[in-house]
Length: 361
Ligand SMILES: *Cc1c(COP(=O)(O)O)cnc(C)c1O
Image (cartoon, rainbow, N blue to C red; front, side, top):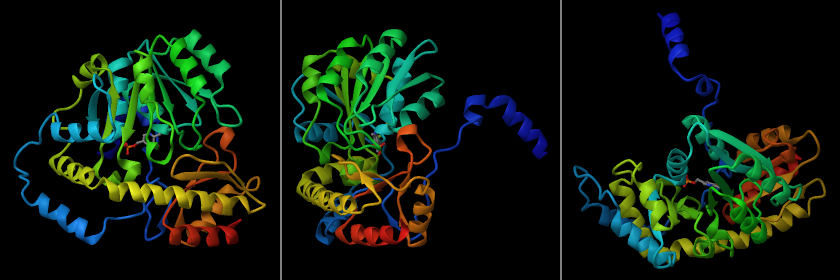
């Protein structure tokens, strides 16, 4: 019986999918969780009570507003989206990436992204059977413009993803290089601004300057990872087409109502983001003071650092034994040898992490 189903699975499931590992999410099991770029803060009790009060009037037997118009209007005002620019919502920006890839790529089309970078670009290309091509960043993690322009010329990618700030490196790619890539590309360039809350630079101006640019954002890193709300911002001509393959009702009732509530109480989230930026600076300084480490400046809510040669796996394991969960980047890319990535937590979490790290290295 089990032999038969194994043979059937082998025959029917696409080989590239069988060859893949499922995206593994570590089980925190009571550890201090600093591996997934979550905002560590919850809401004050009175705000939480108001939120729960508002949810009481929601009717779960009814489908949600398919366009999520109230949420979209609030988001447009909140992000100061210029007139003539439209907004499409996804179940996290992961779903937005999936919609974009499905809308643009075909069997003869290529998706291009610099690496090390966000892993979902590649994974979603594998899921959807699209060709994916990566171009290495420079040693300082900025874009290698010569290599990028060469690949664009040779491969003519239909879609290019640029995460700004980049994950897992935390830096913001130089604007003149981003512009050069957009100008050289005959395809669409998507600027992924998942970490917009932790940096001063943003790309909305590029939407005005170029026709082949879209901007992607998410509420996950700001503090609403559990709600799953991502967005695509751009000219209506693009948004209109991508919207055709959006599944109806992709933003559920509880997410719509909770996001509306959260945006009316935006000050809470903004001050949490401000606090995270302050604590990022002090965590950076304290990591930099450790002679065994190399740490990179970051405009996101995490820091990438390098430990002594050959010790990343052991350091991560010793942190785990002390109930601290961070992400091991070693082995994921040539430029990430011996590297680990830590999310900025609360002051207490950061101190706990630092104390554990000092004994682990
Ligand atoms: C976390 C992250 C996302 C995904 O965010 P969701 O909205 O939670 O799906 C997208 N891009 C980058 C670069 C990220 O780091």
